[in-house]
Picture 1 (cartoon, helix red, strand yellow):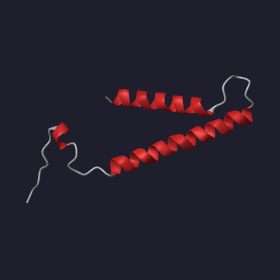
Picture 2: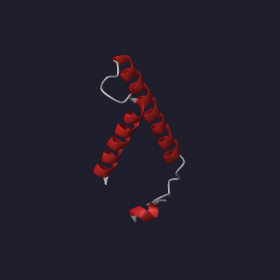
Picture 3: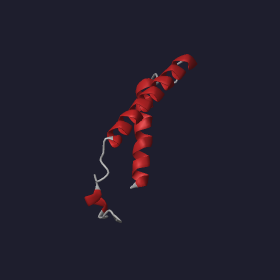
Picture 4: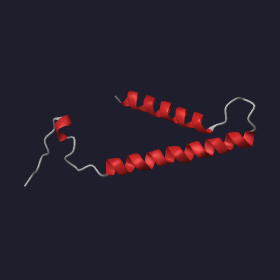
Length: 74
């Protein structure tokens, strides 16, 4: 599962970069760098959005999926 998540992340980063980098190999270096900067900002925004999503989960969310019971002592 972890390898699939990593592969999905790499694919998403590649597609995001392809959206912002100018098409063709004739692009000048300034356009290429500007496109990479925009792609990094977009990927950073995706990271912040996913962090907010996971931060909103409660401690007991997903307990049924892990089939683990919380151990309460006392």
